[in-house]
Length: 436
Image (cartoon, rainbow, N blue to C red):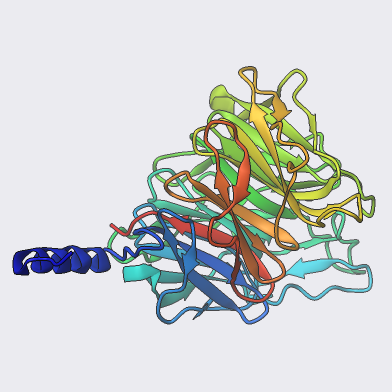
């Protein structure tokens, strides 16, 4: 059939508009952007997320330099205009006891600010430093006006690997062992960070206000629930340290200054609605499925209340769970596992659970697929902005994508392939749905 001249012009206009929107016959428009960190080359892989397929494609210039050494965590400012990368640095030197001491500037950790342009392209702005040593995690408050950065070591502290204080050196006073949160205010126009001092505690040696907020020993991660800020600590008791966040950026100690998580080896802490989920990988060097520990947040005191029947065994043969994700609708929990107890099954996987009305978890019935195979060595996990897809960043330098069934919680492979090349030794990832 031949088209009239008007018909040909109309068709050309339709094709032109579709191309302008980034639409093709094989996919749809871009619904969001993803950034994946890699420690091997200190880079950030950027991706555009396809609306109809979940396929990932790189924008011009990807990968980008991370702005520092050993990038391990990242966070996008609400609105999508600025991205902050936590570069852990080279770490602290250990002594004969295996302990490490934090002195000013040790380890070279940095917070790198990037502006986000069209197609998710990143432009480096500048570096900032937290107040302690070895930064490992960051999160924004709900307004995006403040950025919280977790350091494993507070200034002038010394810790053994088990979270106990380093034995004192002869003739010198013993140093305590604890981590800290550095709070920054965020400029809404430039994204630049400014230090927020601790107005409640003074340094006993100088008499000046502290420039940080102390937490438990060797914190590894942080989660926010309403006005509550929780750090997960790798001390002997696997504790959680709670603060109440104020509108001025101040963190206030609660009546429950230390909470015992009940985990043997806690690997992540995540919030979903009014619940908090802690991932417990079980004893070190024992290949066990581990468990998920659900809690409810107790009012203004920021306590964590255990749920009757709440501790849930992870799905066998999955083992070594390292990260937990709650879907945006608060219906399902997904657990990223690095290992398997069965050599005949995929080594790494995602376990899927349904959240019951009383807060307990039941596995998503999808045998024999659940747990679902993914790339080797998952580290972090996100849901895309349209709530259609779940992605894991994997230590083998890949990203795995899965289709999320919002009704059943089941996961399935993407239609055009579920594995994408990121950057070597990928750590965490983040997504944004827009750039305002």
